[in-house]
Length: 234
Image 1: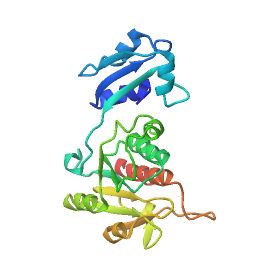
Image 2: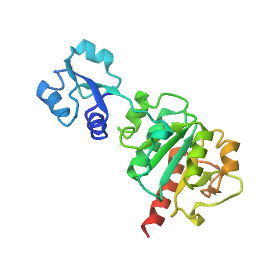
Image 3: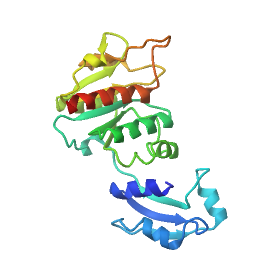
């Protein structure tokens, strides 16, 4: 992981920083020490040369700091919902790191109770996800599992399942988001699987007035999430 903001968010979220590598041509030793001042476990601090840093750095624009971070276990049995009327985002089989990052960024902005990734297709800590989420991979309450496992998790907690789908749907404006609910989105190419549609409490749709019948998944999710937030604020 690289970047000062991402490092700060990871530490604040309780991630264990194993090692911190810094290039003194960009970040001084004092600044490197300051960036980990709030870390409960002090990581190994390693000064690297410009050549080594450029080899390790993933970004074109860089801040002189790279961290080795212990990932968290995102199994559903470890997930705690802080709110009885939880508002959850579920994304089924997202593939594009940019979309996943954007979903996590929106979830953080809305302070969702959880983000659940069903049938994940890749590494949740992909550098492009960390970058596109601007560090919100660390700030969200995230759980992963199969569609069946996540459906069981939601049903056990009496959480309504609101699936973004084209068929048998009502406008999101008419949908009640004030009770515990999960907003479920699929891929832009194929939408949601039959397993989700069969388990759906209500299918919801964002009415389109142009020629296309869908939007980017992160944009759609943002519209639905902030409609839910609007209703809950009334």
